[in-house]
Length: 213
Image (tube, rainbow, N blue to C red; front, side, top):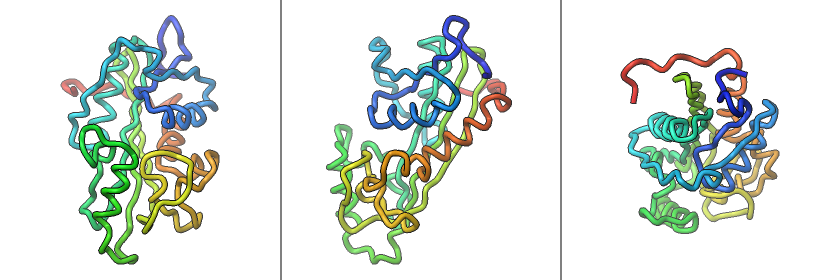
């Protein structure tokens, strides 16, 4: 199964307290027979500053910090919405697009306002997810997934979280918030990244390069 903790070899700690993300990741990692925990199981671990300039840097920062704190394989996802008409924003700032204490509703409202005058043909966007798994013996896996879509003119759907009500998938003909969890996992950026990570799990672990943070 790759690198593991000696005490609990099948435990993976997810570097998040986001209930929606934990639920998605749990379903996606189930095929590996892993026991998944979120950071709620480790209240002693405080907030981990996301100081990276890219999704990869932020995912790596979080995965390594949680791995050091728990001594277990840790998995971190950094993801966001990249809108072409906004030069790739909100990007790595997706979670705090409307400020440090941002809510999903506030972020969506700011996005709608920013896109108010953008015509349909220019509303292209994509969700991007980079996943890093870090092991206690200084190995890691990296995988990435993208999900192409468009920014909807108004929110639709009651499922999902984040920008899901505004992310319209032309192939599905629905927003991400209108998809069932199974449909979303089969199409989403995070689903694609996790599927790639699962493929690498047994053979793709690599030594962390000397000097990396």
